[in-house]
Image 1: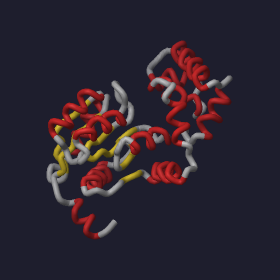
Image 2: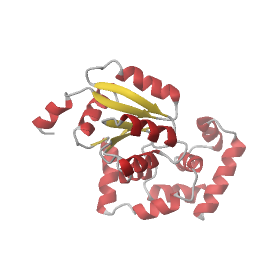
Image 3: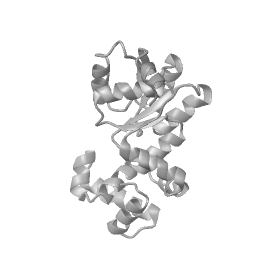
Length: 226
């Protein structure tokens, strides 16, 4: 980072919109950011695609903190819709997911950075400032996904085509199964019944033309989704 960029980060406060479908998480992030009024000013919140696009277009923040998985089409859809009329709005993905297709998908939609929700408040405030001043910010492991995508190591077109067949819930189940979770553990993690997990797994295997969870694990691993 240049000295000029470092100095620019301290200019503010940066106007921010929080986009996440979990109200408790939004409240927690807002509580932390509200402690830094000289650096961050939260001007709005969104919980799904429609409400997020509306509040962003109304407030035109410097930076949008954007979750990847949202009702109504996901974080990528928010970025696409906003950039259709306000290309100057900058997005920083803030997600629990560290899967390659999530990182690549939201970056292709226009986000300038991607960090996971384990980030500290200090680092998040710094990241907002960097994004606001036209820098790019990625957690170290996630930066590798982006470099791999540009280098051709990841077949981005194949990832998109295959995953487009799956619903958001099916993707969540697929990732957990591929990571070695049992059906019972998946059910507990996603707050659904074991029977529902079984239904989703059957649907995933059918859509991806796979025979069992071992093939699913290899499929996901080959595409760096887990």
